[in-house]
Length: 346
Image 1 (tube, rainbow, N blue to C red):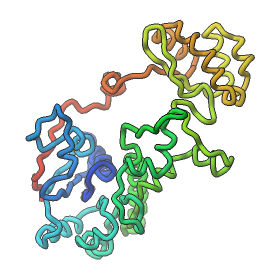
Image 2 (cartoon, rainbow, N blue to C red; image 1 turned 30 degrees about the horizontal axis):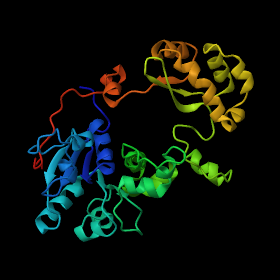
Image 3 (cartoon, rainbow, N blue to C red; image 1 turned 60 degrees about the vertical axis):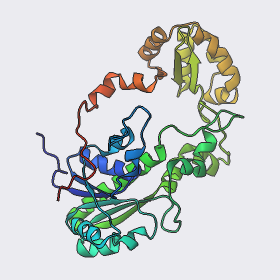
Image 4 (cartoon, rainbow, N blue to C red; image 1 turned 180 degrees about the vertical axis):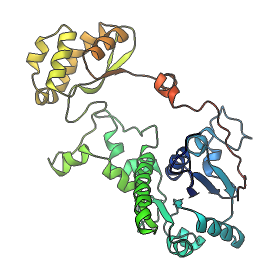
C-alpha cells in the first residue's frame, strides 16, 4: 500500500451536513484518520433520504457522499461525560473541523481557546454561515440567494433557479481545506497550530469572480442570461441537433469562431460577426444564425469534427450518463463499507 504524508494525521470532525464533512472527506481520501463526532441522533443528513432508500438504514445516499472512509463516534457534548471525551480527543488531534454557530463552541467547551490550551499544535478549522458577528444558520440555498448567485441563475425575464448542487458549501470546503494545508506547513516550522475561519457568504462572494469585477470595475450590473456568458459569445448556449441531442459551445476566441463557421459551411458568419465584441452585442442574431446550421446535423459526428478542430464543445448529459463516462469510472469506489452510527474507535 502506498504511504501518504497524511497517514499519521488525526482529524476530529465536529461538523454536519456538507461543507465541513467535505473537508474531512478530503483528508480521509489522503489517508488521514478522520473521527466524526456526531450527536446521539446522528448527523442530520443520515435522515435525508430519497423515497427509494430503506427507512431503516442509518446511512443515506446524501450522507454517503462526504462521509465514507471515516470513523464515527456518537457523543452528547451537552453532557459532562461527552464533553470530557471530546476534549480528550481534541488534545490528541492534529486538525479539528467544526461548523458551530457563533457562541455554540464556547457553550460546549469546544472552542479554540479551550482546546488550544490542551493542544497548542491543534489546527482549528471553523466554517460559519456569516462569520462571528451573525448567528444565523448558514444553508447553501439561502447563501445562493444572498450572494447574487440566485439572481443570475435564470433566463432573462424568468424566475431564478437554485443550483442543483450545494456548490457554495463545496467552494467553502475547498477554501478551508487549502487554509488547513497552509497551516500544516506553517506548523512544521513553528510547532504551533492556528485558528482558521471561512464563512459561506464570503466564499460565495469571492467566487462571483468576473461577475463581481464586471460591477466593481466596469460598473455593469450583472444580469441573468440563462446559459449565455456576459463577456463571451457564443459561450454556454445549448443547440439542439437533428437526432434530438443538445450540444454546448464555448467559443473563447475569434479564431475559434472562424473555424466553427468553416465547419458549419457558413464562412460568411465569420465576416458578419468578426469580433467577440460584435458577437456579444448581437448575440440574439448570432444564435438565430447558428441554430439551424447545428440543428441540421447529428450531435456525435458534429462533435467529432469540432473536437478534431480544437473547438470546445460537448453534449448535454444526464447525471447517470455523466457517471457512465470512463473519467467517472476511474475515480469511482465500487464498494466501500460505511461505518455505523455509534462505532467507537477510541
